[in-house]
Image (cartoon, rainbow, N blue to C red):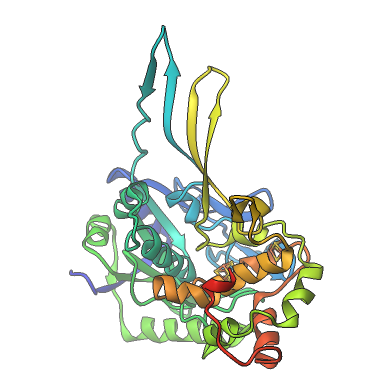
Length: 384
Ligand code: SF4
Ligand code: SF4
C-alpha cells in the first residue's frame, strides 16, 4: 500500500488504529462529550467518542442531543476545536527564580508527546492550514507552533451533519477534504454496514495502519462517500458569497451597518476565542506563589480596548471600530497579509455569540448596499 491508497475500516479497526497511534508514541486526542458539549479530550478507544450524539446550533445557540444510533461523527463542530493544542491559550515562554543574590533562569519542561488528532473536521484542518500561513510561512516563524504541528498526526472525518451555523461549502473548506491530512475518514452506514472509508495522505498514516485489519476500498464505498457529502451540502443552510467580498468590505469602511451591529455587539470577544484561525496574543509577566517570575504568552482579542493601545490611547476605542476590524480582517485584509481567507466557515462565531450576531448576515448586509457611503477604495490598513 502507498500514500493515496484508500481502505475500509470497521469500527473495531478504528479502535485498533487508536491503540496503534498510542503505541507509536502519540498522545491521542479526539472529540469527547464534556459539560454538555463536544470538545477535544483524551482518547483511549472508540468508547470515548460521541456515539449517537448530535448537535443543534443556531445564532447564539448550541446544545447536544443523544440519539439511539451508533454513529460516532454525526455532529458538526464543538466550541473548542484544535487550535489550543497547537497554539495554547497560555504558553509559558520563560521563568526566572530569584536565589541567593542571583537570578536563575529555570528550564521550561520538555514538550509533551506528539499529538494525534482523531476526528478533526475538514474546516478545522483548513483552519490549521491558515494558522500555518501565520506561524510557519509568515515573517516570524513561531518555533513552538512549528514543533507541535510538524510532529502531529491529523486524522480528519468528513462531515455528514453540518449544523445550521456551518457555511464551509462557501469557503471551500468542507464538508469534504482533499489535501492537508494524514488520514481522511468518511463515516458510512448503508446496506454494506457501518464502516469508514479511509484515504491515506502520508507515510505516517501508512505506519499507523500497520497491524490494522482493513480491506481495499471499492467503487461502492466511494459512491457512498459521494452520497454522504452531497447530503451534507444539501443540508447546509448558511452561505457566504465570497466573490469580490474582500474588495466590497475594503471600500465600505464607513458603511452605516457597522454602527448598527455595534448597537448589538457586547465586545465580549467570544467570537475571537472560539474562532479556529484567530491568532492574536499578548505577552505578560507575572509572579507566581513561589516567587518565580513567569513570562506567558496568552490569547488576546481585537475586541478588547487594550489590544489596540498605542502610545497615548487605543486606536480602536469604539465597539464599531473593533467589530469592523475583526470582520474586515477575517474576510478582506487577511488576503493582503497571508494570501488566504481568515474564515473557514465553521460557524462557531455565530453559535457562540451571546447575542447571535451572524458574520454571514453582516457581510451580506454590506454587500447589499455596497458603496452606500463611499465611492473610492481606501486602503484597509489606513482605517485600522
Ligand atoms: S470567523 Fe467565524 S465562521 Fe469563520 S472561521 Fe472564525 S469562527 Fe469560524
Ligand atoms: S460579535 Fe458577538 S461574540 Fe463577538 S464580540 Fe460581539 S457580542 Fe461578543
